[in-house]
Image 1 (cartoon, helix red, strand yellow):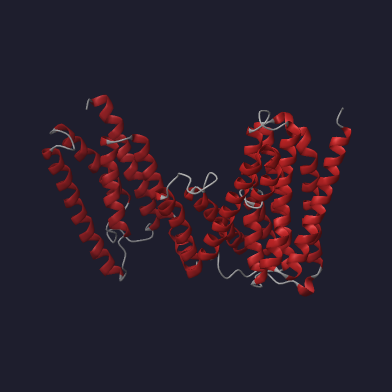
Image 2 (cartoon, rainbow, N blue to C red; image 1 turned 135 degrees about the horizontal axis):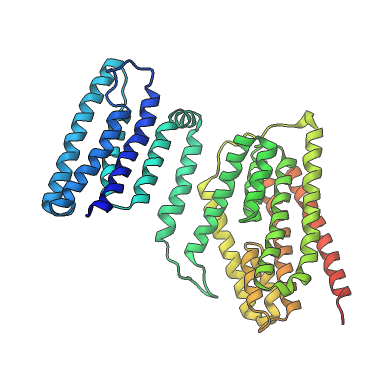
Length: 431
């Protein structure tokens, strides 16, 4: 490594130590001189030391050679032993137990070495992240103290579903009529769990009213059905006011109508004039219901209860619903393949119970070859209507009571507005 390349790398190693040392030194700035195992000077020198040792390792054959590896490994071991001994003595004098200073110093040495041997932006980014984590001690400890076991367990399950189970699932369809892709089914389960978890977190940190509506709007971007299932389960468990939960479903439904219009705009903008009136009319009705229920509940303080979600989501329930929705998709494909183009609307109705986006994309791809623009429009709106009607079934089967009645009113209003808008659209079309 030549000198012009080495100098900026050593400067970064020095800067890494200085950055981490600033955080460590500021935190112990009130301590008397000589009472700290490591401060700003020690951390700065540790970063530079790592860089210098890495440069020496490069000079004797490279970090991956036997000689370079011995130099780098031995220096790191000596540095770690010295820092650990002094940190242990500091802990004993202060009567505390903490390995943070020792580990941070070892990491500073390692990042200084990596600044010379590896990628400069990665080394700098890792140093910033390290300083940020060290500076966030109070917030992190406070967050850990507030988190409950169901929250932690559900969060770990959701992470395991997303980053452990999902990558190993096969990405090929299994079964008749195009089959079911196990990976897609698992993604449905992840969406259901994520929407439920999002609602739980939003209510906890933003309150029942704002939290439910914010979570519903965000969840509606992925699946209004998932929002409906989550809110229905909470209405049945008495976790929150049913009318406020229904308002969340109305918001998610409005987002769903807008989402379908966005897909049409992106893939077949020439069909937007046919699809948009019905979708916009239904969206306005859904937003109207949400506003009425929200302000109605706000005025009725005597029966108001803050939402108290006891569990972000239930794993078996989420997987069960995902399998059910996958079966609906297979049934819809079977209907579509059996009856051909004439069964497009019927198949869209069935598949729309589970996945409106998939129907919208598939119908648009069949236009103008297999389906005309009018046929594609009817199939897409049939799927949207099917999804809207499914909310009545979800409300009746899971939520029950006033929640189910509110969803029935919501669905009826959206369907009526959409039907009138669709009739006017075709009535005003030029012959």
